[in-house]
Amino acid sequence: MSDKFTPHPRSAELLAAGVPDEYHSMLSRHGVGTLVEKMGIVFTHMSADSMVATMPVEGNTQVTGLLHGGAHVVLAETLGSFAAAFHAGPTSRVVGIEINATHHRGAAGGLVTGTATPVHLGRTLTTHEVVMTNEAGQRLSTCRITNMILSD
Image 1 (cartoon, rainbow, N blue to C red):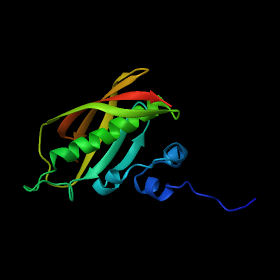
Image 2 (cartoon, helix red, strand yellow):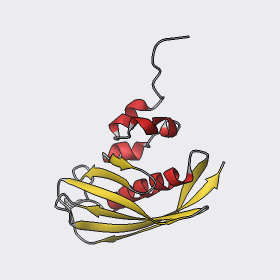
Image 3 (cartoon, one colour):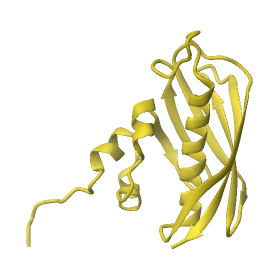
């Protein structure tokens, strides 16, 4: 038996994304995904009741220099899906079945914070509202995502 600590297969990826150590076992099978890494999304709070992450505007802009609307949706889907997975538990998978977004204000720099809160936490479906804000706390967009829970 080895005395060496064996890290989870995706520990570096999970640490870079801000995932607390206590969730590494649960998330090590799939990690956070390459799009999360490419977009610079970093989790700051993780639970079934609230999922929060930041994302830089820089590197995620449209041609006019504003945060791309699709980037808002990527952050929202990431947060809503992770929150649904936390609710569903380790023996289930979740798949997104619907997402929509309303953009309220543009962002040309800094960090965007997304916060997912549950609207409905059921046995087979979850729905989350995800609000993106700028560093001044102003609402940039509001998204709603519904996920289906699939039992393994």
